[in-house]
Length: 393
Image (tube, rainbow, N blue to C red; front, side, top):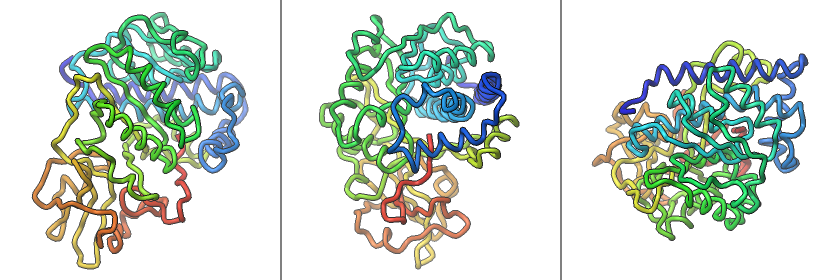
């Protein structure tokens, strides 16, 4: 596979969304919207009261299948496409996929959307019902459930019970690390990542995706720094920094914004019923390779929204080997001005190192027409004194 057919990928993501809504509605005739709203609250404002077994509750499982599986598949597909375009994934489709904490096969379905086929896949999750629901969606969109091995296991237990015995080309762990332990505890996360890395093929990749909320993302950033110290190659989103500069503050976190413009009508109706628009997705991720994989050192990852200071100059924050401010004269070049947060731009002379106390951070504000919905300025600063934004999953 030398190139990706992005139009075909978008069509397959839409098929998955339609199928997930249809399978969920077939499980019960009741309204889905209220259950989706309740589940979203458990992922955001009420996440402290969420039980680890929430997927075993039929109403929550149905809501997750209809609303959050398409959302997750769209996010994962977009991140895989971006990684391919940036040269971080091998040219051929993976010969094997491992989906950890898969729920209704979100990672498996995303791989199907991107590559159009699944030679072999393994999905591991606590809930047999969730795994079966994912198989039903895969079958409905024309995939082959026979190539998917499903394991009803806890990934926080001994990996020998769920790790494949043969090398894996693509491991996906989506919305998993934040459910393992307290965000301040790195050890359980490191153990899971180490187990996943141990089965990667020589050109294999591990994609970790977490909710783009402050606490969860900063825990991922701390894990990233811990792995870099041990020589693990982080391919994305980082660009060669030894230590994450955004961890120097309490309020910043690194995440990406992904556009999902081809949502099918049934899914858009569910968005309206739940009052949760999903045209703009957010994700925090790490793409990790084997020790021989070369971490990138060129290019700048845009990590902040568009700002305009009192001097009228447009600026955006970006990460290279350090945090920098890219300034306009007074307007930024279109490729920097219009790229979504998380996009990659080339190195440029206008970029200058930015400390956490630079005047730019104190005076620059997003223009009124570009202010983000949750009131943040800068890479990920929430102006409500540390309250996490309502990002959902």
